[in-house]
Length: 97
Image 1 (spheres, rainbow, N blue to C red):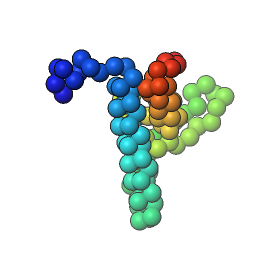
Image 2 (image 1 turned 90 degrees about the vertical axis):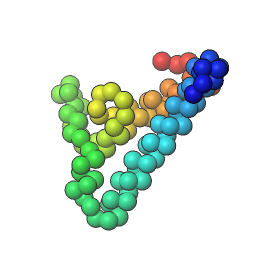
Image 3 (image 1 turned 180 degrees about the vertical axis):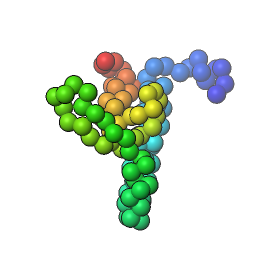
Image 4 (image 1 turned 120 degrees about the vertical axis):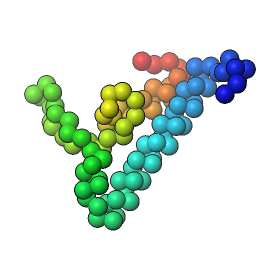
């Protein structure tokens, strides 16, 4: 990216690009899970998950698909949806936190 293009970047245009990249990543991960399930490669699907304890003794422990983006090293579907929603809001100029 040139300096000129970088200086033209706004929070909204950056959020649009981030939203598109994250959405593409999520679709790719889900398509990979589907492909492996269709091939009966359960071990490979399990390798794409992580254990998520409830943490507060009130919720439910679960195994989540790991979308592996950003920090920390685990990103579940809820994290992904929250980030997509936040980026979409910013891209529309309605900054919601």
